[in-house]
Length: 120
Length: 108
Image (cartoon, rainbow over all chains, first blue to last red; front, side, top):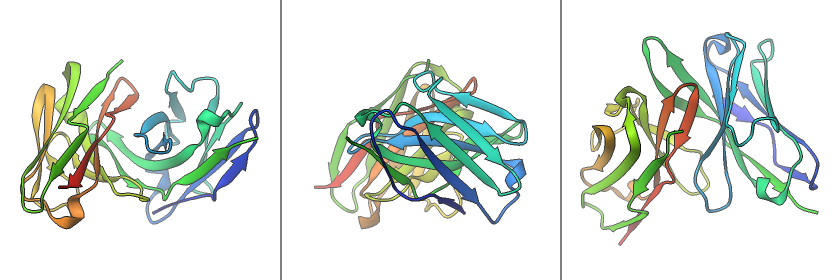
């Protein structure tokens, strides 16, 4: 199960940090991905993190503006997005990523989503 | 960079009908890295199919995935009322993930 932090309202230029807490399985053996969904739009991949490999990958669109971190002691991953504009208004989702030499890639469990609203 | 194009944008069908959703890429993809998700209004996406054709746990056998190369298809053999939703395809390659823009299956 993945439980995300609550809705956020931010002003343009601010930063937001959304957390995603995992439970019910071995946190250390999985990766986590983040996508966002603007109102009425599709899913936009942002980044993913592999805590056990200490590796992150960012979409080119968000490179330099987003940072993923993991706290294995708390089984939590976090996504920070900086320099917010109204275009960043969206629901942000985390998901557990299954990936490995013997695994077919997929996002099998999802958080409930966190609504981020950017408005002056 | 992989771009996934889904068609049609909207599919209007009646319960009991067959739905055929397409996901196309400009370059040949590894079928092992192609997945499908279902999303209902106000909910998070749910994994349906991965590795082109493997159903996720608990997914009914009316959902089938197929395809290879640049063309992949999700087929819903007989639409149930709960199947009316938006469907996204997804690909993984070279440490990046790509989603299609989605196909909405609506009640006719």
